[in-house]
Image 1 (tube, rainbow, N blue to C red):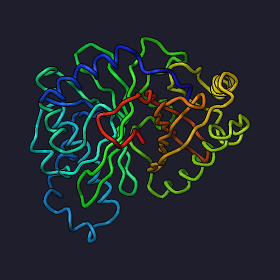
Image 2 (image 1 turned 90 degrees about the vertical axis):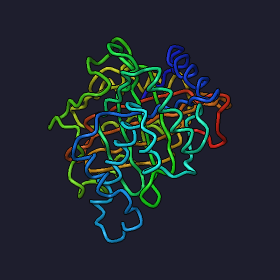
Image 3 (image 1 turned 180 degrees about the horizontal axis):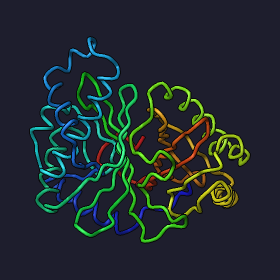
Image 4 (image 1 turned 135 degrees about the vertical axis):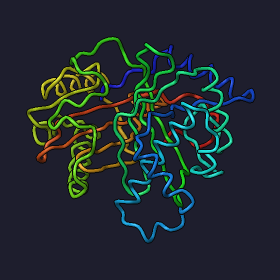
Length: 324
């Protein structure tokens, strides 16, 4: 939750891929793929061609389908350069918010082919996936070449009629070290699972995190930590120390450094005990600011874990949609 600029190395890599794209090969968003489980792949295949029949399916089945499709598309496009998966699961009028990629399904297909050709070992190691309503959020470690630390990436997809209609993403380089001893992807709070908790917890946890986020980040009220954060609090932002005192100290210093900070939530996605907030952080009025996704884990009515990814909003964009 303490923003830092996107590194020059990441910008250089992405810009190089984007240039190749705009010259006829692809344009790079931070979407890619992780190995889809056999269950996910089977689920997506089972629903393929039946996107108009969701009214007869339970919400649980629909959300499971959306998650399976998101994983299937990411893996197929970016690890395999598979263009057919785009035809099956992505709308032709696909709306893109990654500033380096134009709109449209054809761009996405060209992108996948280009990345697969340039980085044949490209991997999207998906850590956790949640879905609510028409939205899916995917948290991943994207690695272009074996042995690299890669990037932490959040992808958000909006579904329409059973197909992916819109995409937002945020990505940053994974640093060599961390102030808290946790990496940017692991689960430290009990139970140590990447799967979201029971669906009946979703509404309560979403309300709790929305209120906590508003008080702490929007209104800069550090006392919110005492009300909403648990004594067992695990931090994955690499610049902030672990525990409740770490978040108080880290954010306290951030608020002092940027007293005119504004944080504007754009969308909240929740499933079970996981709640993600996609926001626009602006440290100083007039700046373009940063796109940020904060992901929280809630247990027994308290926030017990936090992951985030931060990316500068660039001056120009290959599309007219903005990052939010």
